[in-house]
Length: 126
Image 1 (spheres, rainbow, N blue to C red):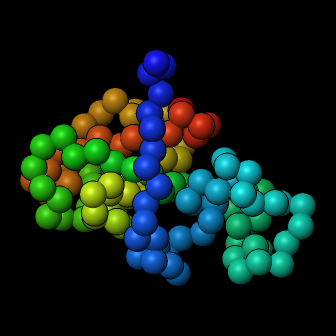
Image 2: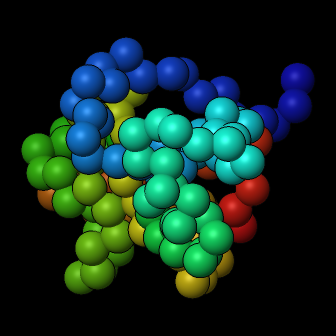
């Protein structure tokens, strides 16, 4: 078996409604956004984010290494890098990944918990 990460789709996506654009949910990576035709809610904003290379954050799964998710802020030392949006069996957070090579091997803080940000094998960011 390969060393790829299996990502479980989240069921409670209603918590994301009106908080994210589809492009921040990685729909562009899954070919679920057509940039050649429009007429969907958020189409103009989504196209602007893509064309001006302004995608600063992405919805990514997290793994709790130790502790419990009592806080929703994900940080590295004193720098806030994201926020937990779904805190269930398979938690997800919106993570800042722009303008640097994101290190998916690091351990991050979330209150007293230690977490890792998981990178789906199909995601094309470094």
